Length: 270
Image (cartoon, rainbow, N blue to C red; front, top):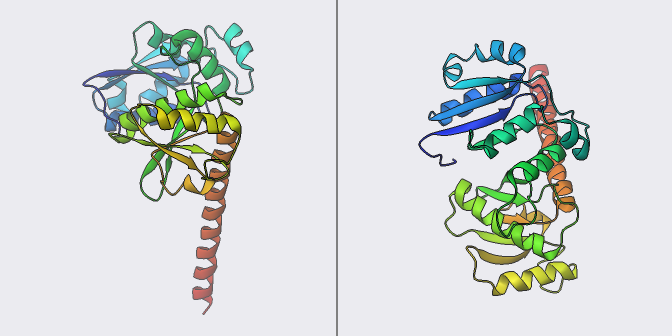
């Protein structure tokens, strides 16, 4: 579970994502229960958000709706969203972090627009050239941080090195791993496998004095085995791998559901 400071203010893009704003506000109430010292700035249409907020009386007492009728469309190009979305719920939510009113921002909206707006308004940390999309994926042991999941389709060696550091810091903060292990996703575990840029990254990480332990190369089946605390790859590969995992999970759930129904029907007919 994430360790939160004594008090924190979370900015929410209430209009982004499927079933918004209903699911966003319902999710905020779950967050309030887990982290009772949190406050929420909810950016969205007041006429829609306020009635939803009234369903959660305890959330309502620690939340403020900041009205805007503008939102970023799911199919909007990032460049268009940045130019035309200066009054959108996403832009205003991100900007509230930039101007110090909020400590963090959450959006389930257009990913490309979110990355573009965040980089423009929040910048990146010194020494980090690009942001990345990261996620915690369940494994047989616990969870692993997996990045990049689609923000950067093409990555150079320096980007993957930065992602390794970013992923390790995230694993420490979110998963509570004191000294995370980091693996590079590759087509084999052997040092000579894969593209030259991957081998270059591996050489740098092996010799560097870092905040994490470099495991070496990992393969696709290591994603769910928990071989390392962090798995690093480019956004193209990471996004495909993530969608493949999601697809297998859904297929397995459907198969299990059909099997249970078939078994129950057989028992009833016996």
